[in-house]
Image 1 (spheres, helix red, strand yellow):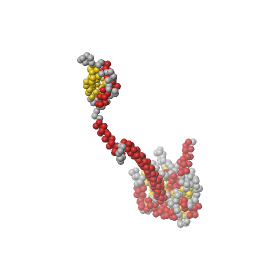
Image 2 (tube, rainbow, N blue to C red):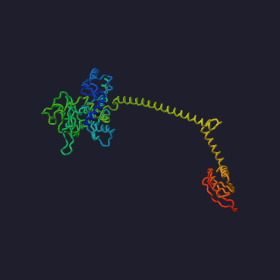
Image 3 (cartoon, rainbow, N blue to C red):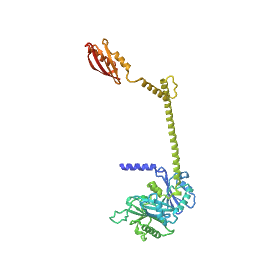
Image 4 (cartoon, one colour):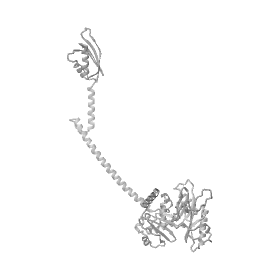
Length: 480
């Protein structure tokens, strides 16, 4: 159930993204057959209509199938080129040949077989999936294709792609299934590859196809086509078809045991033992053409179409020019947005710089009263340097005056101290003197410590003087 739901959603999405209308065409002698379909179902489809190539006006017929002139350029158009007007060959290229070199190398391979000069030849290539060295090639006359294009453009039609008609006839039939590949050419026990032979015959031409293991265009292995002479009998037609089958065998293609054919074959015909009753009828040509195109990648489409070089579809260039114009407009809009954003950013930065400069001038006027503020940063820097020089001149080490003041005010009331010596070094203060008792020495020590000017104060020595009435002492402490 989940897989079916996902499949339905995928189909709905593909229908939604499909073009509104799709035009398919094929050629018969002196006639062009057109059919218009709507892949997404939003528009009505038309049956196949015939338009004469003898010079009649097509306007009325094109309007009848729902294609007025203003809609023709916007409608995707796939035209199939008749196989009887092409040279078809199956070629094996060297593995070293790249995709870009494939057409040149293949053209050189078939040049001796061409009925027209190589430089006037258009090539359509179909590499086999899984083995790109095996290539199915169609060659058409550039002059014939150009003549048809000029006739179509008179009526406002311009095919976007021109494919060999074999691709239309190799598309899935209305009742096709993988089981339709009935015939096998490989000997038993060798991992047989299923192949199928199909013959499409009309009163004026016949096309023989060999398809391998699939129903799409990529399954084509070999194609042979030829015109039936006017007034030929069914027996003559069958002999002509037999010649086409023999040409396939001569080209090295593996033939199936039987071919499906879409016309009756009499029992007395030499073709009768080789054919089955007709294959299921094809879907409408327009639907089959759209399915054929939708199943190909962009690289395969550019390789298959005859519209190359000077005959390339001009709509591609128009679309590219339109895309470039759109890109240029979007680029200009983006550039305008970027410039506006940059301008706004610069404006905000200017305001921030102006505010910062005003604040700096204000602080400079406060720090430098009486000075004209011209270059605040430089002036403040110079003022700071001047103050630093003065600080170094005024400060030559310890605060001697503060230390002496603290020592002179240190003795507590009632304690007499006679200072004998005072030494102040870079980090320490050493003093010695006399006082009345050991208690007075301790009191002096506590008083000096309480001033906060001396730290880690210690009594280095204390003893009775020679008169046995006074105490001499020596103290040492660290100053800031």
